[in-house]
Image (cartoon, rainbow, N blue to C red; front, side):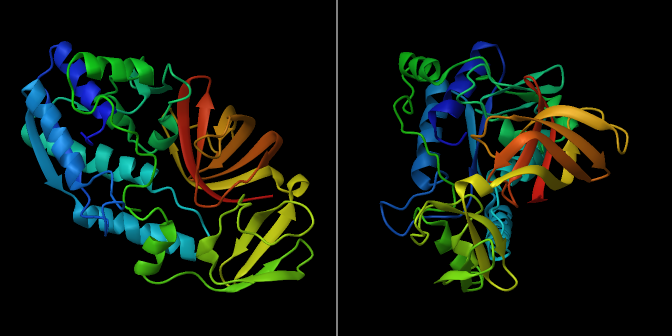
Amino acid sequence: MSGGVDSSVAALLLQQQGHEVVGVFMRNGVAGKSAQEKSCCSASDARDAALVADRLGMAFYAVDYQQEFAALMDHFAAEYRRGRTPNPCVLCNQQLKFGRLFRLADDIGAAAVATGHYARAVDGALRTARDAGKDQTYYLFGVDRAALARTLFPLGELTKPEVRALAAAHGLATAEKPESMEICFVTSGDYRDVVRARGGGGRAGRLVDLQGREVGRHDGVDGFTVGQRKGLPALGAPHYVVAIDATVGDVTLAPRDAIGRNVMFVAGVHWLVDAPRAGEPVAAQVKVRARHAAAAATIVAHGGQARIEFAAPVAAITPGQAAVFYDGDRVLGGAWIEGSA
């Protein structure tokens, strides 16, 4: 339970289905420096989660995962210094919500783990939520298949307005609580504050065009991500970041018509279905970011690595982000983007 409306209603629905429910709040040890700087795992969120648990008459525990979150934050900062764009929410789900939390479930004898994600677990398969606009399966590709068999997603068939209506109808304190869309440990709103507080920013260097000509300077590669447009020099037409070389500090810019790529290379492939034979082509739809419309592609995997060829060029393929494989509404698996061509 995060203290938000989604996990609150998930607990309510589970009770209505006859389950004995125990609420768990995961403390990340991060607090903002002011009232305007807050974490979605803040003390106020713990209070809201406790209020809902009390309203529902269920047991509730706040568990300290400060050390585990610190490791996620270190990885986050290191990736930006390498010129990559990390996705800590995917790792949090893989390592904590569907890792540590399952150990806790085993310790207390719980049969299953449930979350407020908009997704569906059907006969051990991960499937997209009915509300496509809220679907969160992109963040769940790294969950272990065995964990999916004992995972419940009570909101998978609901829309956000339906969830809020249920919360209001049952007097839950979180019914009108605004959504938190930011990374939970970036309390200031600027991810660079986390990067520079945990080992310093990335290498300073040049902004260059596709021919390698210098068009500006920057004070750290951690300030950029592939696909970025804002904050770049005026070059007569809109330009975007297409590559980051953290070794020398070069950030390459290109116009819109030069940012599409047909081929993507990924590592750390994780299958939620039986893995294909090495070299066997797999037709799928692939998302390269959470709000990306999945694009038709062919995946050829060899162990933990794969080459993915898209039917049409895809813009802003960003190293460090997740690439998630779909077959219709079923999640086949995913991997981490290494590069493109």
